[in-house]
Length: 192
Image (cartoon, rainbow, N blue to C red; front, side, top):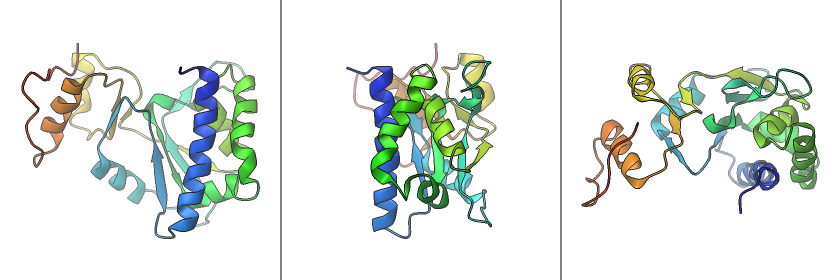
């Protein structure tokens, strides 16, 4: 079952996996992490990361920032429903020297952050001197119809809380012209 603590471990393990994947494949410069109930437009993720340079190789994470409690130690963290993009320099800087300690460190930070994995991963990267950049057009929260309509002209990168197959097909049909039609009987209502 999914618990906040298991989420903490999963996010730490995700960073470990990204490090290993990047080490094995030198042409991978960025990775994007998102929940399984998320519709992600991969073409827009590519545009997003291409628009962000890191000339000093300090490491960059792109995310919706500002979530979490008002007080320290976890104020202003990543809004995890929006996922996050992390570049190679950030992964190597934060995970490279003590790879086996990433998941346990994430879990320890989670305890400081009320068991919220997104706030803990923010602290993890910040603690290693990685630059956090606020990114528009990631939608970590469920949108109502008006909010959804307002999101369209800006070129949404992703939507969180896409719970049904019909909602996924609706978004595919909206954004992808080369995909097949949904199967018969699939609901295609995206917002309430």
